[in-house]
Image (cartoon, rainbow, N blue to C red):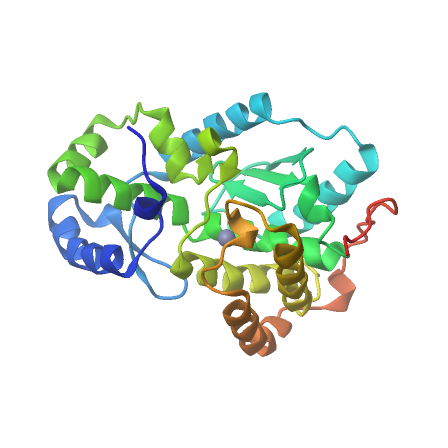
Length: 290
Ligand SMILES: [Zn+2]
Protein backbone atom coordinates (compact mmCIF):
# COMPACT_ATOMS: atom_id res chain seq x y z
CA UNK A 1 0.00 0.00 0.00
CA UNK A 2 1.51 3.29 -1.09
CA UNK A 3 1.08 6.21 1.29
CA UNK A 4 0.73 9.70 -0.10
CA UNK A 5 2.77 12.56 1.32
CA UNK A 6 -0.36 14.46 2.38
CA UNK A 7 -1.37 11.62 4.65
CA UNK A 8 2.01 11.51 6.29
CA UNK A 9 2.26 15.11 7.43
CA UNK A 10 0.06 16.09 10.32
CA UNK A 11 -2.39 18.55 8.82
CA UNK A 12 -4.85 20.48 11.00
CA UNK A 13 -7.60 18.10 9.94
CA UNK A 14 -5.53 15.08 10.87
CA UNK A 15 -4.63 16.66 14.20
CA UNK A 16 -8.27 17.24 15.09
CA UNK A 17 -9.08 13.69 14.00
CA UNK A 18 -6.25 12.52 16.20
CA UNK A 19 -7.44 14.47 19.22
CA UNK A 20 -10.87 12.87 18.91
CA UNK A 21 -9.19 9.53 18.41
CA UNK A 22 -7.05 10.00 21.53
CA UNK A 23 -10.09 9.59 23.75
CA UNK A 24 -11.37 6.59 21.79
CA UNK A 25 -7.94 5.13 21.57
CA UNK A 26 -7.40 5.19 25.31
CA UNK A 27 -10.57 3.22 25.93
CA UNK A 28 -10.26 0.81 22.98
CA UNK A 29 -6.57 0.06 22.84
CA UNK A 30 -5.45 0.92 26.31
CA UNK A 31 -3.29 3.57 27.93
CA UNK A 32 -0.05 2.35 26.40
CA UNK A 33 -1.11 3.86 23.07
CA UNK A 34 -1.46 7.34 24.56
CA UNK A 35 1.58 9.41 25.44
CA UNK A 36 2.51 13.06 25.89
CA UNK A 37 5.37 14.79 24.08
CA UNK A 38 7.88 16.80 26.10
CA UNK A 39 6.12 19.93 24.84
CA UNK A 40 2.90 18.69 26.48
CA UNK A 41 1.14 17.57 23.29
CA UNK A 42 -1.10 14.47 23.33
CA UNK A 43 0.20 11.72 21.08
CA UNK A 44 -1.08 8.41 19.79
CA UNK A 45 1.74 5.92 19.58
CA UNK A 46 0.31 2.57 18.56
CA UNK A 47 3.65 0.82 18.11
CA UNK A 48 6.02 -0.34 20.82
CA UNK A 49 9.54 1.04 20.94
CA UNK A 50 10.92 -2.39 20.05
CA UNK A 51 8.69 -2.54 16.95
CA UNK A 52 9.81 0.94 15.95
CA UNK A 53 13.43 0.02 16.60
CA UNK A 54 13.14 -3.00 14.30
CA UNK A 55 11.51 -0.90 11.58
CA UNK A 56 14.25 1.73 11.92
CA UNK A 57 17.05 -0.83 11.75
CA UNK A 58 15.56 -2.67 8.74
CA UNK A 59 14.98 0.60 6.89
CA UNK A 60 18.52 1.75 7.62
CA UNK A 61 19.92 -1.48 6.14
CA UNK A 62 17.89 -0.77 2.98
CA UNK A 63 19.27 2.77 2.82
CA UNK A 64 22.82 1.46 3.12
CA UNK A 65 22.25 -0.93 0.22
CA UNK A 66 20.73 1.71 -2.03
CA UNK A 67 22.80 4.82 -1.30
CA UNK A 68 26.54 5.39 -1.78
CA UNK A 69 28.41 5.54 1.52
CA UNK A 70 31.24 8.04 2.02
CA UNK A 71 34.59 6.41 2.63
CA UNK A 72 36.37 9.69 3.36
CA UNK A 73 38.06 9.27 6.72
CA UNK A 74 38.12 12.91 7.83
CA UNK A 75 34.45 13.46 6.89
CA UNK A 76 33.38 10.33 8.75
CA UNK A 77 35.41 11.30 11.82
CA UNK A 78 33.86 14.77 11.89
CA UNK A 79 30.29 13.48 11.66
CA UNK A 80 30.91 10.65 14.12
CA UNK A 81 32.49 13.05 16.64
CA UNK A 82 29.49 15.41 16.58
CA UNK A 83 26.99 12.52 16.65
CA UNK A 84 28.77 10.93 19.64
CA UNK A 85 28.57 14.17 21.62
CA UNK A 86 24.83 14.44 20.91
CA UNK A 87 23.83 10.80 21.47
CA UNK A 88 25.57 10.71 24.86
CA UNK A 89 22.84 13.08 26.04
CA UNK A 90 19.85 11.25 24.57
CA UNK A 91 17.56 9.76 27.22
CA UNK A 92 17.77 5.97 27.40
CA UNK A 93 14.00 5.88 26.96
CA UNK A 94 14.57 6.98 23.34
CA UNK A 95 17.27 4.40 22.62
CA UNK A 96 19.36 2.02 24.67
CA UNK A 97 22.74 0.95 23.37
CA UNK A 98 24.99 2.21 20.62
CA UNK A 99 24.00 4.56 17.82
CA UNK A 100 25.08 3.75 14.27
CA UNK A 101 26.15 6.74 12.18
CA UNK A 102 26.57 6.60 8.38
CA UNK A 103 27.67 9.38 6.03
CA UNK A 104 25.96 9.04 2.64
CA UNK A 105 27.83 10.38 -0.35
CA UNK A 106 25.16 12.53 -1.99
CA UNK A 107 24.57 16.17 -2.90
CA UNK A 108 21.21 16.08 -1.13
CA UNK A 109 20.99 18.64 1.66
CA UNK A 110 19.67 16.18 4.18
CA UNK A 111 20.07 14.14 7.33
CA UNK A 112 17.84 11.83 9.35
CA UNK A 113 17.66 9.81 12.55
CA UNK A 114 15.60 6.65 13.05
CA UNK A 115 14.27 4.77 16.04
CA UNK A 116 16.64 1.93 16.84
CA UNK A 117 19.63 4.29 17.10
CA UNK A 118 20.39 5.10 13.47
CA UNK A 119 21.70 8.39 12.09
CA UNK A 120 22.30 9.24 8.43
CA UNK A 121 24.03 12.41 7.26
CA UNK A 122 24.39 13.35 3.57
CA UNK A 123 27.61 14.99 2.42
CA UNK A 124 25.46 17.67 0.72
CA UNK A 125 24.34 19.04 4.08
CA UNK A 126 27.95 19.36 5.24
CA UNK A 127 28.45 22.01 2.57
CA UNK A 128 25.80 24.16 4.25
CA UNK A 129 27.27 23.46 7.69
CA UNK A 130 30.07 25.84 8.68
CA UNK A 131 31.30 24.19 11.88
CA UNK A 132 30.70 21.54 14.55
CA UNK A 133 28.04 23.65 16.28
CA UNK A 134 25.87 23.81 13.16
CA UNK A 135 26.23 20.07 12.56
CA UNK A 136 25.28 19.66 16.24
CA UNK A 137 22.11 21.63 15.45
CA UNK A 138 21.30 19.31 12.52
CA UNK A 139 21.87 16.07 14.40
CA UNK A 140 20.16 17.47 17.51
CA UNK A 141 17.10 18.28 15.41
CA UNK A 142 17.00 14.82 13.81
CA UNK A 143 17.48 12.98 17.09
CA UNK A 144 14.76 15.29 18.50
CA UNK A 145 12.28 13.60 16.13
CA UNK A 146 13.27 10.22 17.63
CA UNK A 147 13.10 11.43 21.26
CA UNK A 148 9.60 12.76 20.63
CA UNK A 149 8.37 9.54 18.92
CA UNK A 150 7.38 11.41 15.76
CA UNK A 151 7.65 8.43 13.41
CA UNK A 152 5.53 6.36 15.78
CA UNK A 153 2.89 9.11 15.64
CA UNK A 154 3.13 9.40 11.88
CA UNK A 155 2.75 5.65 11.41
CA UNK A 156 -0.07 5.57 13.94
CA UNK A 157 -1.97 8.39 12.26
CA UNK A 158 -1.63 6.64 8.89
CA UNK A 159 -3.00 3.49 10.46
CA UNK A 160 -5.91 5.30 12.05
CA UNK A 161 -6.84 7.35 9.02
CA UNK A 162 -6.63 4.40 6.65
CA UNK A 163 -7.91 1.47 8.57
CA UNK A 164 -9.78 2.73 11.61
CA UNK A 165 -9.31 1.86 15.22
CA UNK A 166 -10.49 -1.74 15.05
CA UNK A 167 -7.78 -2.70 12.57
CA UNK A 168 -5.19 -0.70 14.47
CA UNK A 169 -6.09 -2.69 17.55
CA UNK A 170 -5.78 -5.94 15.56
CA UNK A 171 -2.32 -4.92 14.38
CA UNK A 172 -1.29 -4.26 17.94
CA UNK A 173 -2.51 -7.67 18.99
CA UNK A 174 -0.69 -9.43 16.17
CA UNK A 175 2.51 -7.61 17.22
CA UNK A 176 3.57 -7.61 13.63
CA UNK A 177 3.66 -5.13 10.81
CA UNK A 178 4.58 -6.82 7.60
CA UNK A 179 4.33 -4.05 5.05
CA UNK A 180 7.81 -2.67 4.82
CA UNK A 181 6.84 0.07 2.36
CA UNK A 182 4.45 1.38 4.96
CA UNK A 183 7.09 1.35 7.70
CA UNK A 184 9.58 3.10 5.57
CA UNK A 185 7.14 5.77 4.46
CA UNK A 186 6.07 6.24 8.06
CA UNK A 187 9.67 6.64 9.07
CA UNK A 188 10.06 9.29 6.39
CA UNK A 189 12.10 7.22 3.97
CA UNK A 190 10.39 7.63 0.63
CA UNK A 191 12.93 5.60 -1.28
CA UNK A 192 10.65 5.33 -4.27
CA UNK A 193 11.14 9.07 -4.79
CA UNK A 194 14.81 9.06 -3.83
CA UNK A 195 14.20 11.59 -1.07
CA UNK A 196 13.39 11.67 2.60
CA UNK A 197 9.92 12.93 3.35
CA UNK A 198 9.55 16.01 5.49
CA UNK A 199 7.63 15.89 8.76
CA UNK A 200 4.67 18.19 9.35
CA UNK A 201 4.84 21.64 10.89
CA UNK A 202 4.10 20.60 14.48
CA UNK A 203 6.76 17.90 14.47
CA UNK A 204 9.32 20.21 12.90
CA UNK A 205 8.79 22.93 15.50
CA UNK A 206 9.03 20.38 18.31
CA UNK A 207 12.25 18.87 16.92
CA UNK A 208 13.73 22.38 16.56
CA UNK A 209 13.21 23.18 20.24
CA UNK A 210 14.13 19.73 21.61
CA UNK A 211 17.15 19.70 19.27
CA UNK A 212 18.34 23.14 20.39
CA UNK A 213 18.28 22.09 24.04
CA UNK A 214 20.00 18.79 23.19
CA UNK A 215 22.81 20.47 21.23
CA UNK A 216 23.37 22.90 24.10
CA UNK A 217 23.61 20.05 26.63
CA UNK A 218 26.10 18.37 24.28
CA UNK A 219 28.44 21.37 24.28
CA UNK A 220 27.42 23.03 21.00
CA UNK A 221 26.63 26.76 21.05
CA UNK A 222 22.82 26.86 20.67
CA UNK A 223 22.84 30.12 18.68
CA UNK A 224 24.39 28.09 15.84
CA UNK A 225 20.90 26.65 15.20
CA UNK A 226 19.82 30.11 14.04
CA UNK A 227 22.81 30.61 11.75
CA UNK A 228 22.21 27.14 10.32
CA UNK A 229 18.65 27.99 9.26
CA UNK A 230 19.86 31.28 7.77
CA UNK A 231 22.33 29.23 5.71
CA UNK A 232 19.55 26.80 4.77
CA UNK A 233 17.44 29.65 3.48
CA UNK A 234 20.27 30.84 1.23
CA UNK A 235 20.93 27.28 0.05
CA UNK A 236 17.26 26.64 -0.74
CA UNK A 237 17.15 29.76 -2.91
CA UNK A 238 20.27 28.87 -4.82
CA UNK A 239 19.62 25.13 -5.11
CA UNK A 240 15.99 25.13 -6.27
CA UNK A 241 15.46 21.43 -5.52
CA UNK A 242 12.34 19.96 -7.09
CA UNK A 243 11.13 18.03 -4.03
CA UNK A 244 11.53 19.40 -0.51
CA UNK A 245 13.64 17.14 1.71
CA UNK A 246 13.65 17.54 5.51
CA UNK A 247 15.88 20.56 5.61
CA UNK A 248 14.27 22.36 2.70
CA UNK A 249 10.78 21.84 4.05
CA UNK A 250 8.76 25.04 3.89
CA UNK A 251 6.56 24.30 6.87
CA UNK A 252 7.24 25.94 9.13
CA UNK A 253 8.88 28.66 7.03
CA UNK A 254 12.51 29.41 7.72
CA UNK A 255 11.49 32.77 9.18
CA UNK A 256 9.09 31.11 11.63
CA UNK A 257 11.72 28.58 12.70
CA UNK A 258 14.34 31.28 13.14
CA UNK A 259 11.93 33.37 15.24
CA UNK A 260 11.03 30.40 17.47
CA UNK A 261 14.64 29.29 17.86
CA UNK A 262 15.65 32.85 18.78
CA UNK A 263 12.85 33.02 21.34
CA UNK A 264 13.95 29.74 22.94
CA UNK A 265 17.66 30.62 22.98
CA UNK A 266 17.66 32.02 26.53
CA UNK A 267 16.35 28.68 27.87
CA UNK A 268 18.74 26.51 25.84
CA UNK A 269 21.71 28.64 26.94
CA UNK A 270 21.13 27.46 30.50
CA UNK A 271 22.21 23.98 29.39
CA UNK A 272 25.30 25.17 27.52
CA UNK A 273 28.71 25.08 29.19
CA UNK A 274 31.79 25.95 27.14
CA UNK A 275 33.80 23.41 29.13
CA UNK A 276 31.70 20.62 27.49
CA UNK A 277 32.57 21.71 23.96
CA UNK A 278 33.81 18.77 21.87
CA UNK A 279 36.70 19.17 19.48
CA UNK A 280 35.25 17.92 16.19
CA UNK A 281 37.21 19.21 13.23
CA UNK A 282 35.47 19.91 9.96
CA UNK A 283 37.69 18.79 7.08
CA UNK A 284 39.27 21.79 5.35
CA UNK A 285 38.35 20.75 1.81
CA UNK A 286 34.69 21.02 2.63
CA UNK A 287 33.75 24.60 1.95
CA UNK A 288 30.44 26.30 2.39
CA UNK A 289 28.70 26.76 -0.97
CA UNK A 290 28.03 30.33 -2.02
ZN1 LIG B 1 12.80 17.67 11.00
